[in-house]
Length: 195
Image (cartoon, rainbow, N blue to C red):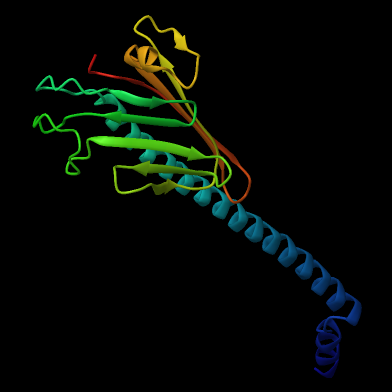
């Protein structure tokens, strides 16, 4: 019986210091890999979230500009106002009589609207008569292009009064980048409904 006990004790030897050190090194490598993966996943998630938020802002502004430019020149009472009073590469100013009162200075709904891009500040502003309000920041570029009824690009910018009456479509292109320097570009062609 004593022999069995002695054999059993010899078979139950613990880990040596070398085995313990090797185990700790392997555990440390596994933890480092997992930590690196989690850190990179978080960084990627943050970049994707910022890009999505930036794109959402661009889409919202694009939708607003599209809706308003599409209605430019709405004149149910034939008041005869100038549809586009400014049309340049970075600015557009237009009018519409949405409530049919032959007056385009109403503020509810907004009937006299101007958009302007400030390249130095990287901002797009909207002005409805009360002064410009920044509606989008961190833009690299905003460009307005104008087309006649045959789809020809009107190139003599800023457009003179004759060319402004020929506008039948406006292309809006916006470019920017997220905080992580990922480029985001949007472009849309807006057909003006009121000729």
